[in-house]
Figure 1 (cartoon, rainbow over the protein chains, first blue to last red):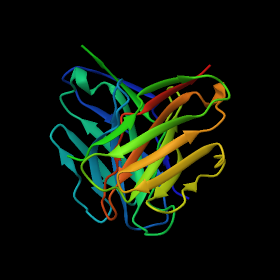
Figure 2 (tube, chains in turn purple, red; figure 1 turned 60 degrees about the vertical axis):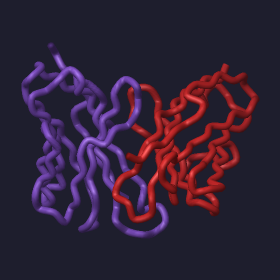
Figure 3 (cartoon, rainbow over the protein chains, first blue to last red; figure 1 turned 135 degrees about the vertical axis):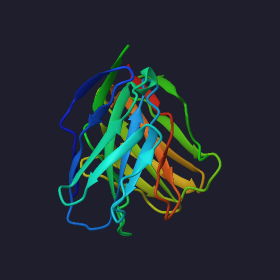
Length: 118
Length: 115
């Protein structure tokens, strides 16, 4: 079974600076999706960024970018120019591409709580 | 964009009663819906996966007779917590996905308190 590990329970960063959140995963599959979700105090899950494993190019969405290292099974999230609104829990997640029962579920990491210091 | 709603957002019930939570996909047809449970400061724990018109698939350790899931249409899934007890108090989140789509779309969650 796939597992996702986020080794940083909490991180903090000064406003306008850059922070990187770590995520590693374990899988025997070659094709899959990786996601970063944000959960602010409202607890609404928000998709931040998505990476397809078959793509070598790292995904980027405005201030958010990933460093996807497939061989190392690492998927870190970099937030540039941190803003107060970025404060939230961040979850890394894995999803298989296999079309079999149970394979399509998201496997979440434990989460990292990000604090932005003004 | 794809919107998923949940109702109610908060519910308080007495121990021993049952409570139903609705999850609706408002602007798309969801072939698959997922129900999660989240304890404070913890990650989301998948409870079950439901496909429209078929029985839900429950994760190991989740009591199917206690957490009844129905996915009767492509836009509605319900989670019924039967004979609720205080330990069932938690935050319940649903999400929905169109077959073949990459993302899941999450509802805003329901906070259940059992007194």
